[in-house]
Length: 229
Image (cartoon, rainbow, N blue to C red; front, side):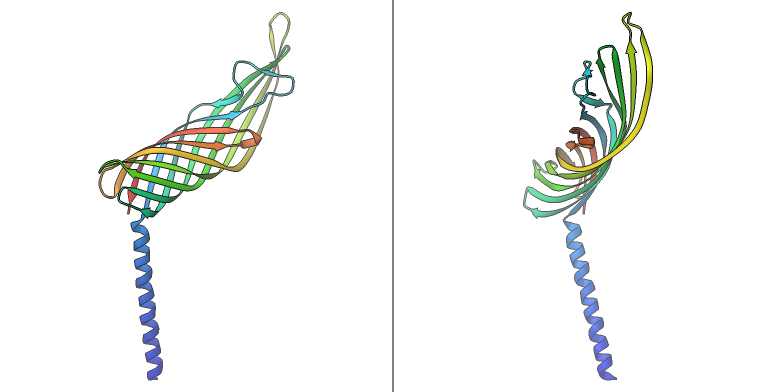
């Protein structure tokens, strides 16, 4: 009986010691961690090749979409901490509100108008380097990769123009497509440290995307509010 009690006490002591060590490890992890929320606007563009036999009419070789709203959450861990320099692993999720863009192309007397509604979102992982410029201001640089998902609704409008210049509507073709993939991203920004734990920031980011086998580019400007543990 005494041996069982001794064994039980030993197990309880070991369990308590393990909890204490886990609590210390968690506290150490949190002290090197940070989290932030971001919100801002983004310009979106995707390369576009016209249908065979058509030539683009003064719209460039890409879909230029209207600016969209974007918001995201970020979490990071500082694995290198020096006096005025931090290097961190960082993960984030970001979504971009629906936006519209289109092109116009022609072939002889035929005209083709394409309008697209684009919605996309991204999960990213990468590195963040932070350099303190003074006691309150720091500069950050980010690089990494993100996995994106894009959903697009297409409307193709066909028209024909006769020799007198009168335009006749032929018909509409509406359909939806979705695509996903992984590409690089980069960013640069500044953070103002309100106190030891709270900071506000301004960040410019460039996300590469390649939906539907076309190359795209998303440039985001965002404000952030963060908390360092």
